[in-house]
Image (cartoon, rainbow over all chains, first blue to last red; front, top):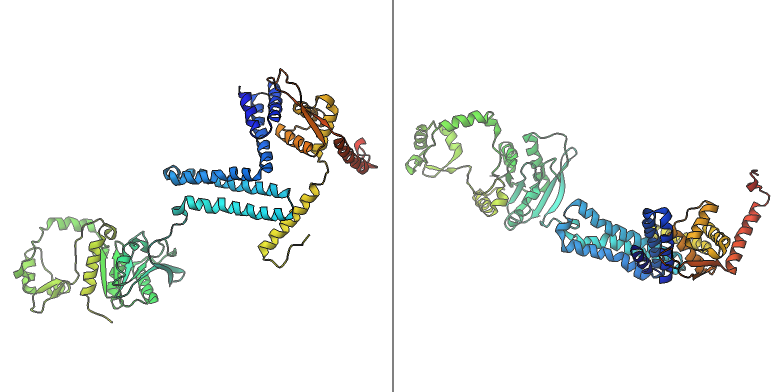
Length: 379
Length: 138
């Protein structure tokens, strides 16, 4: 019965009497050589017949060889979850490789038996088929993996800030006051890819990726906050943005402290988006927190407490001390009538996760606009 | 035949040379000369007289020439020889062993014998004076 199947298999590729004789030969020898030998040579004979048939009907063979490429492509397109692991993707790509190699081999074999012109034509056709199988069709099957392009409308450049250190600078363009966006720790300026385009209508926007973060060069040293801030200053100079407002997320607070303390002439403001505090003041933060917990919360100051700095001092003295008046004056603005105004540093609480730019972009944008428009004009 | 134009770009130049060399090699190979395997098969068929078919030819090649030929390779070669007109074949009557399947009996044609003689004469002339088969190295 299985012998009958073998005979039918052979007859797909050759005449029925040849198929009968071949199957008969293999059956006759099977008694002496065993089933393994039999099936091995069923496969061998089939392969030989296929090769023969292929060179007799090249076009049909080529179609059959290339067809799996399109089947695999369709499968990948229709059932992407089936190909979501590297191993499965490799399996799928093997189809393209086999198709490309066998169709190339096939055309070469056909060319060998033809004249010069046909050889040239078939060689070029073979190259074209291989190219299509290997590059064009898989590209159609996996457009997003292979052709992913950063959709954010920025121009990426490298700006040298130190010996052998170049930082990735993303320039979203735009016009108006300049904003420099600093990424949080461990991430690059691409963190602002979705956010920055909302700013370009009113501002000139530039993003910076810290040294040794993907996109910028890897540096053996230079991770002190002073040096990291110096990097930002050099970018500001190189890009030619004047007196930008520097907006930083998370770890970027460390650079912004230094920018504010040492480079205030270069910038016109700092926006801390849930950014890092200055650890210099709380070397032992657990002890600090333990003490802070024992201090009752100060009830918020009433209008009378804000009538003057003296009134504010008297109010604060009741709750653990106010400190010198000079200190209060550096924290709070003075209204024209001598009463206490808002904080110099405006602190707003926004709901959202630590990554506020993503979790609450609308309010961050609003606050940035309010802050920048509150700044005095600087040349 | 036009020579490849050297003035083309480097890639095209290399491609043209590759095609040119390949074409020449192929032209030489397709002349009606017998390959070594084909000569062995023709001799085996001649020896087997009326009983030459797949199984016996392979057995004869193994016994006499020490060659194990895969069935697939043998069938390909037989078909090529038949296309060249060097052998003919016909189906035998069905036999009970082989599950009642007929054998394809082959015989060498006159053209086949001629081609074989030509090849063997070439060997003869090349061997002349060498004494190779009697073990003395010239």
